[in-house]
Image (cartoon, rainbow, N blue to C red; front, side, top):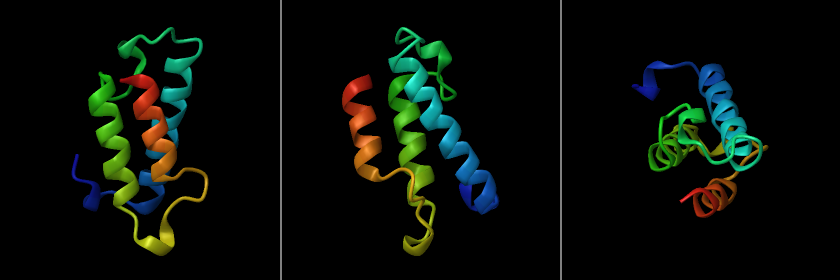
Length: 77
């Protein structure tokens, strides 16, 4: 997916969706990669990082940080 072609709103929503997938995967999802939007753990984290980095510094989401994404990565891989 070419992130530059997507609206800022869409990218916020998708990043939020990917975060929810992480929470489900680590909880009730019993660590099944089929429940991840990206299909596997490494791709999922890579997509989250790409989305996060697609925002300008003053537009980065306040509800998730790169540190949070790194925590998910450690828990999921």
